[in-house]
Amino acid sequence: MMPTLTQYLVISLLQIVVVLGFVMTLVPLLTFAERKVIAYVQVRLGATRVAGGLWGAQQGRLHQSRTVTGGLNGLMWFLGRVPVFSILRGLPMFIADALKLLTKEDIVPASADKAVFVLSPALALVAAFTVFAAISFAPGALFVFPKAVPFLGGLPFNGFLTDLNVGLLFILGIASVGVYGIVLGAWASNSKYPLLGGLRSAAQIVSYEVPLTLSLLVPVVLTGSLNFNEMSTRMATDVPANGMVAIGRTLIMFVGFFVYTTCGFAETNRTPFDLAEAETELVAGFHTEYTGMKFSFFFLAEYSSMITVSALASAFFLGGHHLLPFGIQGFVHLSGWWGGPHIIFFLFKIFTLLFVFLWVRATLPRYRYDQLMNVGWKFLIPYTLIMFVIAALLRYAA
Image 1 (cartoon, rainbow, N blue to C red):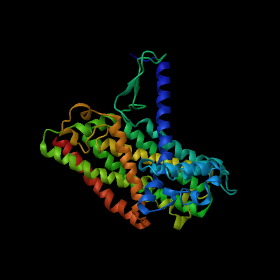
Image 2 (cartoon, one colour):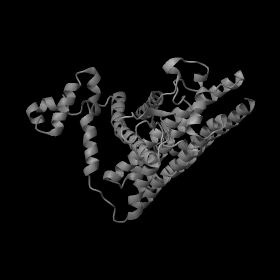
Image 3 (cartoon, rainbow, N blue to C red):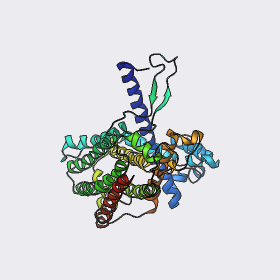
Image 4 (cartoon, helix red, strand yellow):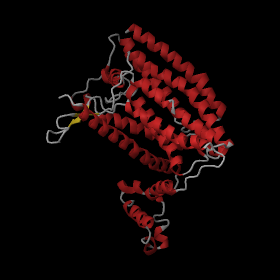
């Protein structure tokens, strides 16, 4: 059943709402998860026992129950006695930060370029959200609207917004615009520390764009396509007839995953490549002069970019919508439900990589700036060039 233009527009709008809702829900939860992961790794009590037995019980439950946060803290502490619900300890801190960002005074420095200062966070956020238009969370329809549903009955609800033939090119092009939001915001602040952070970020992103793009050219060469769904499926399930080529294909995907993920950390300004936000050197970096919701826009863009990096790594190296990574799915023929593409496999891989982002921040120290550049130009770029040549030889041999 082919939808009419109006039905197509309505379904597209619903899909946009679902995708943005997913991202806007996941990003705040990531900030909460980041505090919890770092707290458990580094034994920090704040995010695991905030205002619970260490504060509320000692101050008296009568006083505690008179405040909204006090009552919430008491509930969290009570639920924390159950092992499964202990993860909820620290939730009031997360809620308080969200309320603070919504209510904090929106300040624009007197000497700032006001128009650019205001537009920069929006530019970074829009670029980070727009890339999801070409990311496929499921290769086909998630479900079909029941016949009883008025106007949309019998029509499919797809797991992607658009199925572009040049989907990867669209993602890389739009994602690269995000650096302008950081650089312009740093420049518009008219302050030396944000400017230094912005220049660092620009040099860092430009440097790591090269190996990141080259690492993604490996699946492009191996599949001969730029379509997200086609690339993901072929990287997961195709098995060349030549056995040596098949083994080489799996090995290069394994190496390419680590190269791409390393570049992804730098692209998103995450530890150990967070030189643009180095608090000990730059106060807080490029967003020093931003407050309130403008400040939060930069962080929404950063966490959204983490989701994008995780989605691309999952799609082109970890098997995408299929269960097994690095093309192993083509060698192992799984039967039944496990053998098909599912959104659950894709989301699980994304969440696992997001946990790795948080884990790395809790364990690795920050690079020096010269070390950051050395890794990019002296190691990653030569590695990706070699990988690209090997991928071309494998494609030719197959």
